[in-house]
Image 1 (cartoon, rainbow, N blue to C red):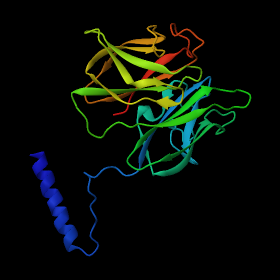
Image 2: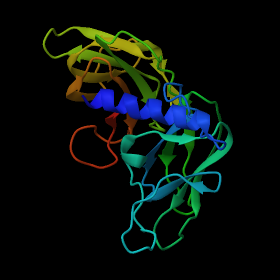
Image 3: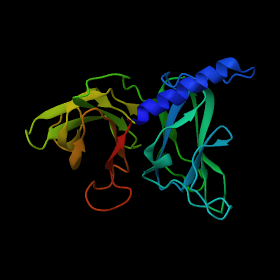
Image 4: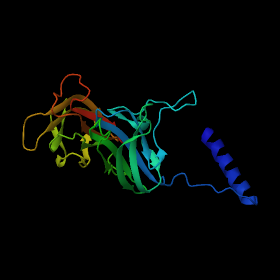
Length: 260
């Protein structure tokens, strides 16, 4: 009965709006969202915790119950806004990661220029090795070119290379049940680049990175589940001079982020 009551209220509002002098304009809630969507990653090796900005507007921050801005920001290996996109107006921007701590508060350590287009999605990465003397770290932006409509019996997966000392790599998905492998993207992906999205059946997979034409597994992550109808980005972060096994924070690691 709830949908019927809602319909009646909506019809009543439309009639009332049509009969009054100062009629309220009702937006079409089925229309596509305006503006662009942006997601922010702190994958800068040894980088400090930061808040992310679009020009001078703060995009990410930790909530505070004291009324004083928190000195905690987005740490290395984390994604701002709980791994969600933030909506911004289309246009030209300088995205930046600014120190959240009391010392050097709001100092930009990474500045990343980009143009974002309405209706499109983007990922902004702080990536590189943090220079503690200059207080700088590299960064880049990639467009998240997943389709608006696709086969909802499949998942879509792509690979982004955010490791500054990694060679171009190819990602493979090895199904843990069928033991079949699927190459993600058409070719190896270099640092600061994103491969194309590739369809994969719902299931659990081992993620495997290899150099082009090599059978050797360079970095792996086991038993990662992909759900049909979802879109995923697998990102390589970390220092390739370290062993990918163990618990070192800066080791090469395959991050799994949901786009939708």
